Image 1 (spheres, rainbow, N blue to C red):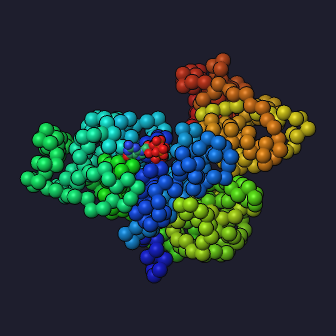
Image 2: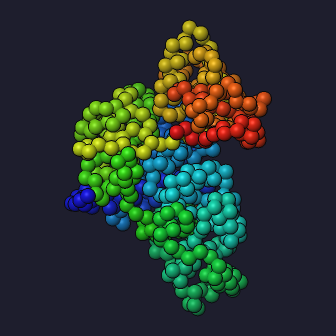
Image 3: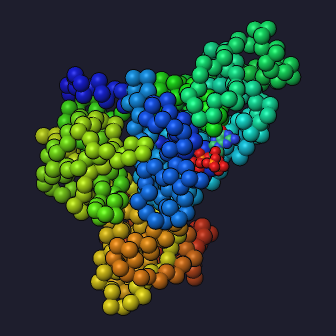
Length: 533
Ligand code: G4P
């Protein structure tokens, strides 16, 4: 295949598209703010999300968000830095996250994992991390809050390695923490970068870099700190994993950085290394093989998120797509593979730090939101290629919380079914039915419990239907892979429940993993899977 040339190539080569993952409160928002500051995309730190000031930047589209001061939806931020065009995919920072969070990771080329230095790996990081490893994307670690008392550095690395099963390679090494935090030692430059807590909210000035052998350092770090650093570096050089770009690119080795997002220490250093260690958008798999943005001239994109009623005044529905190859121009006509016809992509927009803005052009690596008249589904492909292709689908992630849902007013059955089906189509929830009965009972499954509130709120506000929800004790769902099986005859545990999904596929719900094992033992040849195929 030929190579693409000219402006499109130049633009795609500049693109870096990554997601930030972290457990709530680790400092993801603060770090994002500082990134944007470097890009000049915002003038003032604090405009991405000010919890205290309730100044929600991008996604203040739902009352729930305002009430709780959290960000339910994921957003995309774009900025330029050092000749690069950077797209940050933000994932909801609340512990109740949805499938959207997982799907956002499907649109990223790499991930930045923010870890609180005093806490190590936390629950949500673990979950999100699983999706990154499934995709083999590079993962970078930023260990934050070094200006506070931190865990032992080796312990932190050990935690990442054992909890997440990925090797680590510290690019720099902290000197003390909390009140004793003096900065980091840059392992390649063999210099100490000194910390000063005077730059809150502003761009990091010149960081003072002093070689370890420089006598000047004596006055700056204590003798014991210096001795400890020398010992630790020696230990690290001897026993730690060496930097290996190939392993980083495959997601098998995570470069680790230390810093303090709040005081803006180590953020620019991180950004600079990150940009060097990541690549421009890489090929993606389709039913016609790999589509390489450096070879494929035509525009192609896939939908990874659909969001309704972002703007309540307009009752709009936006399909977010990740452009994988070529260039996008406002109003262009593209072929919608799943719909089997051409569509004009109207009202293209990009979400900037503080506003949505209309765009004229976008390139491979970028994320755009287009007006969706209700024709798109998650995973759909759009392209202008003559030889059409569809990108690999986005897996359906297993819900972990279930509830029986019914409308309070029986006369509103029609609106209820319509609303719940539309919301399910957006992918915010999954709906199931009892295996043997008709449409009467609806069971809703969600990845994060917050989605239950979102469902209730949206049915009331958008469809005028009040609902009742009864939580169910199930936490595990398994699809049945066998086609030649009588589901009614499966011998399960007493707490197992048979249901079917919208595509009439049979599934089993379980309360715990023990029940899954028992059921498998009792039914020879039964194949249960975590993802719908
Ligand atoms: P999140 O998006 O991952 O949930 O975390 P966020 O950035 O909102 O940070 C959570 C809290 O941690 C915030 O404090 C923030 O100021 C603080 N923080 C972030 N990075 C650092 C750091 O490097 N050092 C220290 N000491 N603190 C940090 P808050 O009091 O909860 O909110 P706020 O009132 O400051 O906004």
